[in-house]
Image (cartoon, rainbow, N blue to C red):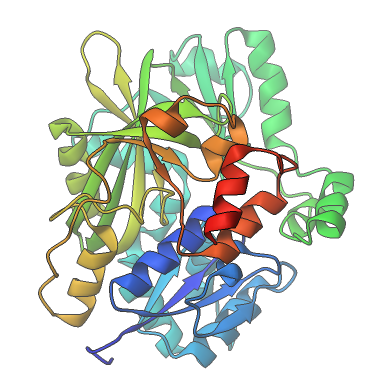
Length: 401
């Protein structure tokens, strides 16, 4: 590995805007960045890529393995949950695509393979967190609605399906009837019509295989914690947390979706929880942890791990809070450069998420609006998703770019 400029391969199966932001931040931290991504991915709109490889939803392991072989990367960065799962599968695969060098790179990048099954399974992760001494809600695996009575979780409860993200596999249920309906929906394989539509119109084939194979999802239930959502973004190395930032969620795209506005906070219990989990699971790379801060007590309940870079991972808030810089320092062995804060305002309106949610949102003015002014291709990519061409923000950005 070259300690002067390490090569990072970003692996993403989605067209998620924050992955592109992280790629830019990694470049700024001193990396040569390449990516394996689907067509139309925003990461390909940046000016920083030094190599791009095609991700194929019908041949995910083969396309990722081919990119790893060609990129000759020093580190892999997962951009989404499905990408992490594919990398885990590639590690355990007996196919010729997963040679020893590839397996070693995956382990170095993501952490100890011994714990991959726990990271991939929500119920196993929650059980491990509880055994590690982290505060968690009551959790149980659901087969049918009768399991609620056995688990004594009660209502309301939160049902979550494995292998989903962005709120697609989450339901809050308040009765046995709602639980039965939600279980049927969450456990069912993706509808073939939906999978075909996404493949044709979005060029996203990731649902085709589970739909054709009639693959059912495992579902677990958690007791409902009344409170405020919060999230931690971390950079880890061999079980140690190198840098972390903690946020309270102020606004979301929809009830179970991604945050669009966050406020940076200091929360000792959240910090302690992520340090315990990173050590227990021997994590490396970027990871996110979701919490509920209970009303009244403020106690932090860990509810989920996001085994990949999160949408706030590119933001730097000074020493100990610069995730890309800390990870590059661990990779190269060089001391981390002094990190500056992206802004003094701790309220962050994420771009384009909050603007797409509401172009008149007061957070766009009262908070720090995280617009990538130096990446005009990314800006145009964001606005192609919207017909709000008459907005003042759009005119400002196009004039500036």
